[in-house]
Image (cartoon, rainbow, N blue to C red; front, side):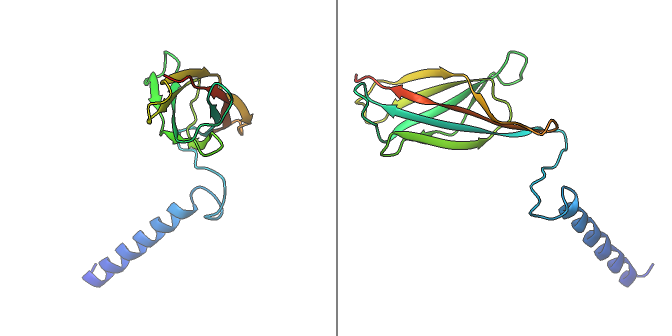
Length: 149
């Protein structure tokens, strides 16, 4: 095969493989069907309100969810990205995480007025999975009161 034929063959091969990558998971790029290559997927939601002892919402409190996995899981503790409470004391976030057993949430006031605290939560299944690789959504929610130092 001459040099020109080799370049054409390489271009066509690359083009065909590129097209296959974009069509391997669904009929269109916007298709919500997730690829099933052996890794489950799901969502984990945090929706927690932080108040002082009188019930007044606290702003800028660091809320750090820590997933506590079962003993047979390779990673026993998985610290997720910290969330800050807004003016209404709410800390809300959705994480792409499929394996959630128990959750310990650590609350910390960087201004130093309130004592560092933690609470354990049991996630609730809020959206069912598809009985395949999508396990649905789990949520932890509630209110936590911080005490002054």
